[in-house]
Length: 462
Image (cartoon, rainbow, N blue to C red; front, side, top):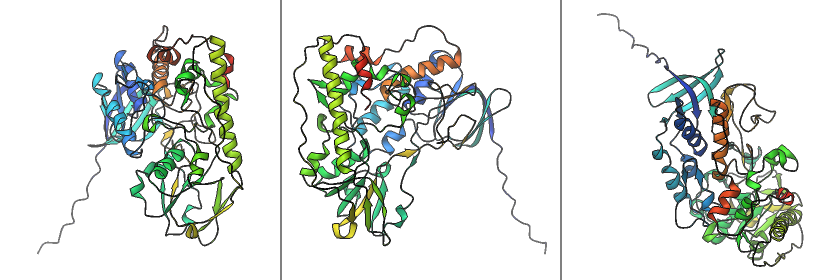
């Protein structure tokens, strides 16, 4: 009898080697916009997307999600919203459908289900990009790389969250879909930025009893003087003003976005009104006591409400000044008056006694660029750049909040930034072709709005 033979040891396949001039990492709106300019300019490139193009819109938004900016803001290079409601607000599924129609208009060299695992400098002035695709590992050699993976990677939850009672269901806003997803009982929503305020509204409208822990997010009116505030701000030049021109400069990148909603045609989110209707409001959540059910809050709720209202009024006043300075015929608007005042700032909440059975963490994300091995990051892990151009030749970032303007992380500002970055990459010269947000607003939303940008408008970022 012959000796048994051992099974052959499987060999790992060597990565497939490929070369291209530019690797674009990410196939969302920023990556596709980059590709549009590269296709137009005849630049050899590839777009590597870990999932499917634009999948984040379907995967990380709740069922009742709507845009908070008007539909006319939805425009990418060579592609714009062309539906019947430019001043309305698309739902999640409508955004997914609209964005899904973009790539077929220009045929980007898109490789989906291809996750980039590392980016390193090659030593010869280029880059090596390691990825895993449907057919196994891939290695790409490129002269330049444009990172278009956004700035929201790792959901933030407090380090003490595991100390909450195991009877409490916890999920991040990225995983929230609908009220039916949560167990019966009251809900604590932590965070009052755009996601937190809108999720609290979603649950509140569904008849759930909500406890909302406020952060420092400001708010903005949905409509003022007969128009959407986002349209006024665009016409005033806010979305075209570089971050360096804002008060505080680059610190604007750290500010929380104003909360408002596009739901049901758009309206204000007034947390005071929610409180009148039974929502319980608190200040910043500080921690949990031993036992996992007693929460502690800072007494900052009243101050947070007042500060948000101050920004709301400030924006309205700046719009008023702009209207007056330019002789615009706009109807008057009543001044906002608070509809509720708290008797006190609650500092504790017993989850069991209150009947709270779930917590939704809506306190944001942190960046994760550990796969990028290049010396272009600050102490917080964010890339340092000037309008997407880093200190490493050939390495670029696009699609980040406040990359250059307030509109940079939104559909409205992507095209201008993509044109700038690809122009720097290719050495393209000549005037920019992307229409300014101010010009777009005047064209797509009727109104006798002059082109001038006044100094007062630059103070609106609250």
